[in-house]
Image (tube, rainbow, N blue to C red; front, side):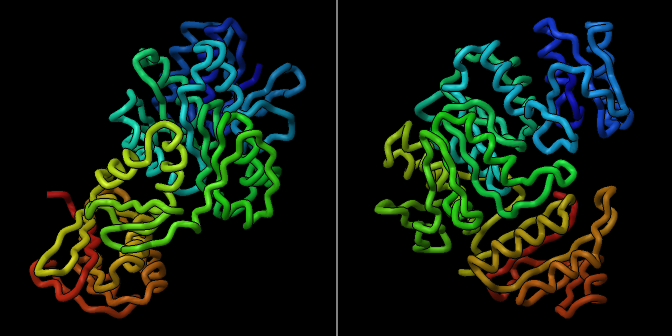
Length: 400
């Protein structure tokens, strides 16, 4: 058999098939073994253990010599192949029997990490759960095999996985959204088809009604649950409170951002099969998210702080959007150069900032540079006790 794409877990899959007695060729389509010491070491260890049963190619091999080709769903090749999600599902069945009945799997474009974290938080008091999402490493489907191999699976009631390339075989499977239908696999396929083709792997599937309307979808699934995110009515933006059908839910003051509503609806719909609604309401209110965002009140004004050495332009854009949707007010932005190896592109940042209608106060070296591209106030350093309105502070600084 041929397994393609080291970057998305080909070596992990190869090891599984080698252990099952197969001979495996690996095509490192993106030359990752030449670029990454970790991948190189992993391949060398497998080669030492399995010898001639494992072969590596950097150039495209002859597909006709293989009875089975396995690749990520977005792989740009002109041959029929088994997607990684299906290959992982078959191996799970062979190794662990009906373990899929313990698996909750979430994929999609946005909201995967928050949704899996919410599901875990809601269930973990009543059940023994194990969570693996992008906060803990790779979310390529073969990673699930690596995770389960390291665990005593009998100790857990549910395994909650975030995946990037569709759904594996699972009891509960959710596609949070497909916000745009872009071409993948070198233009041979599209993201929509790729994501939704994996719905077959979920016993109970959950999809976003907006996607049905956006793409005029006609989905055939024997147990399809359509999450109507537009049925949620915001009652208060902060602390976030909303009504969904006849139930009222709220988050703590540590959570802000209207996107949490849509993410929570998938968690609610899945978890109501496993715990009662009162428990879901209570757990939602006690949910916190681990990030570098700090929210506090100073002189009856809300201050949202994000001081982070690794802030990038995309993260800054999301932070501003969330803040303006909920609070409005002033935005302090800037910080210092030379904090991390990868410097921020100030011109690119300025283009993002121009999209928002708000008052900027620029801070420090980065702030001074931003003044070359757009208007705003300027301060050399920031003092939280001098804020005049609800404020968002985004500084690229060392964490003290």
